[in-house]
Length: 433
Image 1 (cartoon, rainbow, N blue to C red):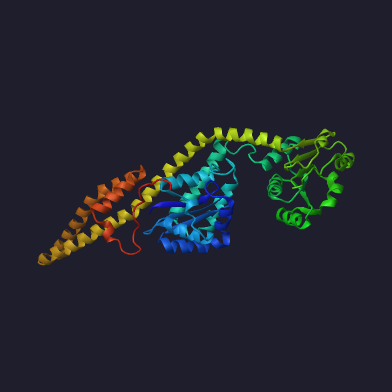
Image 2 (cartoon, rainbow, N blue to C red; image 1 turned 30 degrees about the horizontal axis):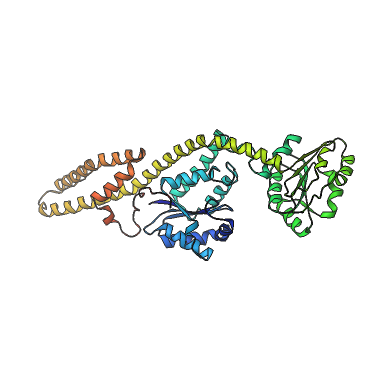
């Protein structure tokens, strides 16, 4: 019952590869059913985001990693193993815990991955079982501990989140504020998502290609405008976020000043995350206009990422502690069926020997025969009591797996397994590919 995590991520594969092997939610069921059939594994789960596609298995009789590579290579249309990695046993547990806590993310400490791990667990419940259910559930708890007991996720660590943070310095809160976004690319998309998350009441998206503006607006419950209409609505908003691909500035004093006359003393925050910049520098000199560009945002991001990196040792301690707790639990889970098999096999031996003895003791009275049968059962239970107690105790302190393997070998329990019987103990740990 070896635990493995096999897949690829932003650390090992470019986006052109990641997007081709990504597994959509509606594909997960069929994909996992195929992997389970190929590997003979008892449990499986998949975590697929824009930055990673990973398959978790309680490995069966066949090589789980090889089956994962075949399945992902089929999606890619070529061999995927050069982009992949495999984590086994404790390392696989540690990996998922670090992923869930944002410690393996492109942006250190980001918490969006927490929800993605939760959604993956819910999506894969039919293909998972007690071991993976406990793994994902404990992974979410680890992420919550890291989030609340360290500062790993505090402070903006992306350009879009930094833009929101700077806007909050002006207004205190964005709850109920109005925003306008110029542009409809990826940065505008992420920024709009951040704004909506912070409680922006109404958002406007303007773009030279209206269809793209409409698509982005629909995704976030905003209003789309034709580019030429946006200047007439500037007086209505508190925040203007600019993220176009224009080759030269498109926001000048003459577009902003009429809106300021209508706004009175209400401040206007302008965040320019475009390269080249969308906003003329002199716009920032206007009264009650607060202009931030990419350099301002990068300074915020760099400072916050440095602070987050300082929190990594504390987060690693939490992860290490929780890995051992899970591993001890898993060791106990492996010991229980083996112990049942051990006792069952000893019971078969007892019954066979008792039947053999009774053929020679047929002259005994029924009460005497019952006494012999009771004696054989009591003797067996006496013999099995201490090994059973010690095996459970060893499982509780993390030494159970080696003893389970020894028990299997000494009493030939593997030879007693039939198809679909008790799985073998968790395999020894191995290093990353």
